[in-house]
Image (cartoon, rainbow, N blue to C red):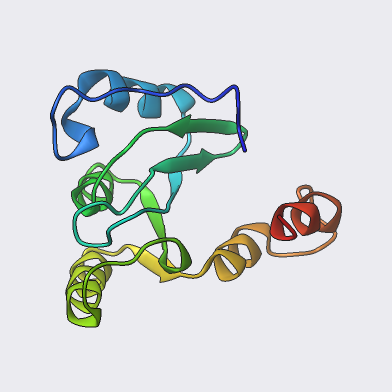
Length: 134
């Protein structure tokens, strides 16, 4: 989706925020809103895609990343449509933990609408509808 986005390889850190290159790249965007999507909710809340304005960074990360980002003062949105796990109980546990830390739990459409606020904005219908149709 974002072929020019940098991929930041971790060296074994479970929490991507513990990787200095990743942390520096996120901070360098100067943005404070982060949208996360992932593979395994409680461990891998992410193919981590940070959507901070026009900046996009891609890294593999974890639910711990959402908690670390909140602790660092970021507004974090976890896309519940884009992750899962082995049992509904594990997903519920991870989502409760993130929500208790102030992470917004929503599906992609809800996240997009909350960030966009008005179809007349830029980005608005012209930019958002093609994205949602993919």
